Image 1 (cartoon, rainbow, N blue to C red):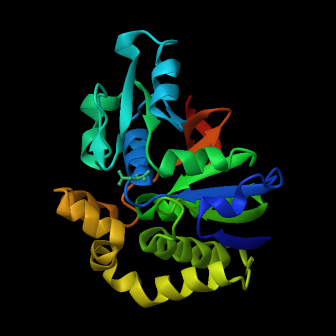
Image 2 (cartoon, rainbow, N blue to C red; image 1 turned 180 degrees about the vertical axis):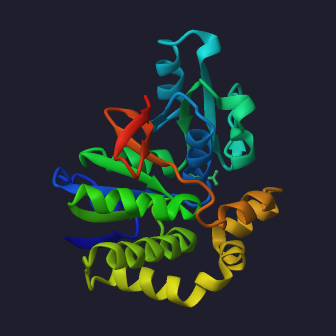
Image 3 (cartoon, rainbow, N blue to C red; image 1 turned 120 degrees about the vertical axis):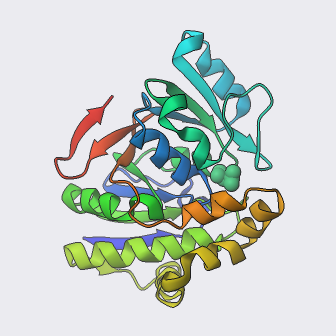
Amino acid sequence: MRIDVALVPQEIEGKNLEHITAIVIDVLRASTCIANAIANDCDGVIPTVSVEEAMDISKAYARDDYLLCGERKNEKIDGFDLGNSPSEYGRDRVQGKKLIMTTTNGTRAIRTAKTAPDVIIGGFWNISACCELAATLNRDILIVCAGQNGRFAMEDTICAGGFAKKLSALTGAVIEETDGCRTARLLYETLHERLEEALSESAHGRNLIKGGFGEDVKVAARTDYVGVVPVFRDGHIMAIDASRNAKVHA
Ligand code: MLT
């Protein structure tokens, strides 16, 4: 088993990932929102690449059964039900609902990895649970950072380094000596003891704080806060129970 890191989704565009487990990371904030929604028993998340696609898909559902979610320029989209703050994805809002979601980088990155048989959505919130599941799948692993508009994002890269180290410890897998992997590993080793500060210092973290979303940056640094593993298969993100590798919420 080998572990590699793509620092931006563009590295994997057009690549066939059919023998690979992909782990997509968008710490600020899509991965964290999805982990919270899945932990609060939503009826799955459909990641879309545009507002138009989200609206189109919603037409297949009764109005009470779905929520339109996501952001553009960090803010809730006009006419949508939820923005992209983890606190919006509480049980009272999401339980039993299908979430149709579009975010600037996160949902796009998930879709870019779609040729992988399993696309795990991970962040600090569920890092251990995701690694446990990925280890049981027994394939090479590609960790994909969602990045920021095609550019490297520090918060995703730190988290990717944490995933690589944990996965290697769990499975004995070799961490590739690519620049992406080395950068991720070194960043994690340097910053893992002050994650909240590191996230706040990242370009997107600063931008979110400036926009009044400082609490989102703070909560995204929580580690192993939930035990759910959201997995994207056949167009839907659903919960997988890492210990049993079984679907628990369709
Ligand atoms: C994204 O997908 O680009 C992010 O989740 C943006 C955000 O912080 O809302």
